[in-house]
Length: 421
Image (spheres, rainbow, N blue to C red):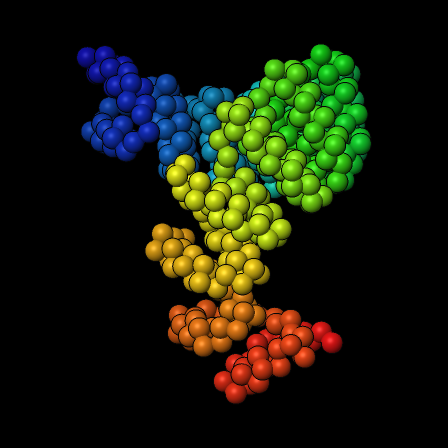
């Protein structure tokens, strides 16, 4: 009868696998009154505790298992090591890993790589440890799979160790493991971050020649890098290639191209890209609108800037402090002080709260436009609110000497002045 109850309890715990405290409380209550759970129920509890982030409690449960009748299996150990790694308890995970080997447990490819120890040490840049585990893996007869290689290659690329990553790519073929889109995307990303777009493009061609289709993420990495490098034409050609291959560019792709064209002052192309994004069903983000509005502000086209700002609200997008700051700067440049003050009131009413850059931009704009008293009121408010501002004033002595005199009389001392003669 007791064994039947214990089997039933195991089923209940498994069925209650939802991420909550209820199955855990039931589990401990039942064990307190003398009943035991089988290995499956223990494993389920360990998994559940790790998923809710209670790794230390899961580890205690593992120790209870080791002392009791039900010894942990490879799955249970793998779950704990994975949980410890995700909780950044890498040394503890490494210690447990060595302990289970001493106990005669033979780790498999999963515990080595995809969800456990190699992934954990790679995340912390512990390359020597990662290489040591890979060697142990091979020496123990466990063949590294695509996931193992991808984890290590991606980690090397993120740390700028491109040559090491390329060596691993070559090693894959000798081990009978074929690279996939994840492998190539990591290499392309690493090369782009090392300012080697041309080499990254070669890898893009190589993967397509091998019949491996790049995904949107792969294309976006390269397009973004090309735009930052200044080769926007090449980036646009990649966009066309994406569409030809039946892929829909994402918001990152469009934003990269818009930003790239902005850097080259090609406003017409920025507007075309924004329109293409909308036509193809990709909803503009706040970043997209920031790029467009910031450019209009720099070009002193404040009518278009404000129109796009209002359009954002109608579409349910909430402007951020960066956008408000760009608009305030733009309106100040064209001398629309009343519009600046109205916009600032909207920002305070709708949110977000103005940050130090917004206040600094507003102060500088008000001073430049001769609104000294308003500037002083704003400055005092900021001082009362505990905001510290770094302000630089560009002054043409012949034109704005009265501004200097006013500031000195009011004991208003900016951090530094830049005089232009």
